[in-house]
Length: 386
Image 1 (tube, rainbow, N blue to C red):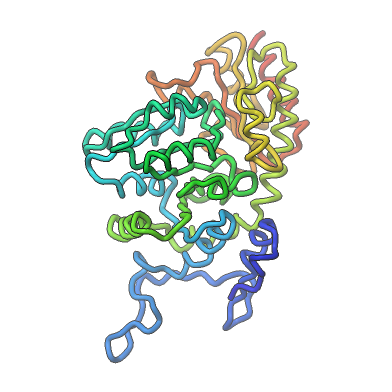
Image 2: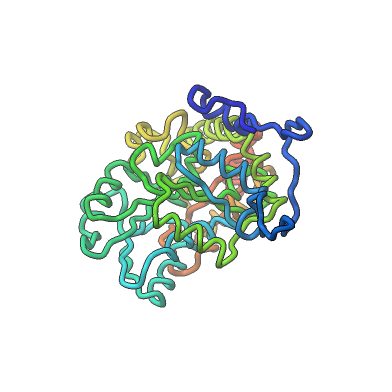
């Protein structure tokens, strides 16, 4: 039972109260945990409860999906077993012969999967610089392009894509626009408001925010035939989220707004400090006025520029790796969006074909005291250059 008026309440209130849902039977504020994989038929063999089997319809999904749809101003939402499961389900809803345009710089695992899937599925794919509208236009195939995939800010260089402008290019060509908004989160950007048809989140990251589940989510502008194929694929392929993980995801989303706002403020201060550090060659962060795409980010990311940034270490790859080795507070780990701050030499993870510079360190800023984070990273940079 949702008690918050979604028309009047602000998104932070919707998230904090999880739409104001209260269990009708017990009046509990926290939702019950539904673990059952199957549901009882009535004596006449019907399912008047509306439930039959958890792979297709799990009550544990109801509330997190409703919250996600409300936060993104979407018509419907789905949770998945991982961000990759959510993202790949969109491409699996395409037909052989279709064409896709995707970013040159994007989440590396998905980029690699798209390239391989396209070859085996008979889908054409072009990777374009999504910050260059002319390049996006040249990549379109008006008779074939069915999907334009964007990621903004784009991992790990934090490139900014003008959502409205690229959506217009996609729609003019008869294609859908899907936006990976994992880093921006609905706290900062709601792509559907800029025309996007689909929004994807690796819910492992900011939505959950505690580094204790793996999850993904999709939100749609319209419950159309394409969305129906995605929903059917989730049931048939089985990339569903577990009940306990769904419960944890909902719990995490209730603190989404204060976590993201804290991380944004800290990332801004850290970026400004690192610009002044003698051992830092470049800081990549949309919140810096001279960052390419800063003005677009300021327009479509209300309230902050995200908790992710990267630094390029002046002395090169070895010094970057050494810096990561010498931090005390930052944690050397893959992922992002948790309450703890993470540091990673990204090129080592992505391998020899990566577009990521070898001197780059990716930083996920958590909710620790930002002065401690600055001091720790500065000391590690100094020690790596001794």
